[in-house]
Length: 258
Length: 294
Image (cartoon, rainbow over all chains, first blue to last red; front, top):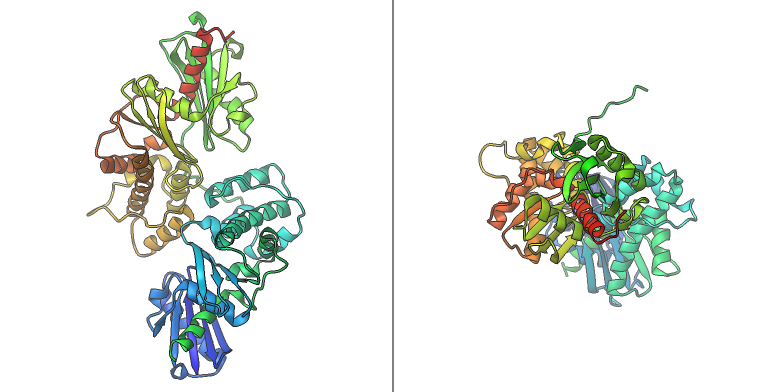
């Protein structure tokens, strides 16, 4: 059976094509101001990579904050379920999963079959999402890709007092003016957001293994910081973690057809 | 590379002032209150319980310097030597960083006292919207605090949020209030995101959809009024409603807020940004009268 999962997020739209439990195609495009088009484009890219025709897809699961734009979906998969199924696909032993994206973050505790039993979300505040690190990277005048590696160069713990991204930006500018080394500032930024995500995860309970999905799982500074703050040996991150929810949506679309 | 000239739309005018009716030479006690905020700093000189002059500046990256600069600016206006000051009180977010202060008092107490002075003893509810926080304070006829709530964790509804938006829209902050009423037809729906970072993305989307800058400003002023109103409601409004802080100068936000509250705000000829520092200077004067000064 061939299914597709389409995750229309705040920043990027991701499509995964699943054939009998194996990923055969992926596509990712910026969501921009036209999410309906982004859905079409990401699906086209994934179909091309899979070497199939669009008609071969039997079911499509739609998820993400722009789920309404996935008009071609036959199954609407909520964000928590998509995350949980995605985590279970890669890490069947995971009992806690978190997904940190550009504008939202969420965490869930999973049962032995990977179904969510409790969850927490943040979609109101940039302080708990990737947008926080992006805003700080702009203030530091370094690229978003450099932020994580810079963070790993520092062994200094420096508090960032402001929670709000807008206020933290002024604080970062203050640190630059007081000649604080860029790696130390980057570390303070990552420790600050990782602390907030860690406390969200702790609210629902940390049961190992812990899986991390979403674009922030690509940032080695963030992963190191949150691993430290959760006091676990390691976090399980899949290859291409930003596709986690799309994988979950594709899995869910296959399951609901039965 | 040629240096890029960037217009700073958030920038508001710094000012100082001297009361022409007062002379420090004939005053008994001269006290100063310094309010070091996150965005602006004020120093108010008080001679025997009346305002002698003040300085209002933008806070730099260093609080002790900002406190010093505000005092220097006020002293320049008053044409008075610094050693004439009998007592100095620091207040505000950066109050611990006023090295020459004799003591510090919280900005809640100072704002209530200052509003009581600049708006008169009828004030019962003080809304202070500054650069980084929103305070709603209930007080008695002496300007003593009876109840208050504040939000200082989030930029939504604060002056800094407005500055960021003005920069995004390319509208000078001093014009933002008036410009937010310059649109045709119905009042646009308020921006739905609370977070300023997300509201910026939402605004970019609205501009792309063809909204004018004035319409987006109206939508953002409406969102700020909503945000402030939710705090004000929790404290409860008693008539005698005074607004202090920089936001009092933005009628785009305040008029929309007063419409929600359903009463008119009190009026004053004083600069609303000096309320906290004025309160601190008046507390300093009271301490001098008790014999703490000199």
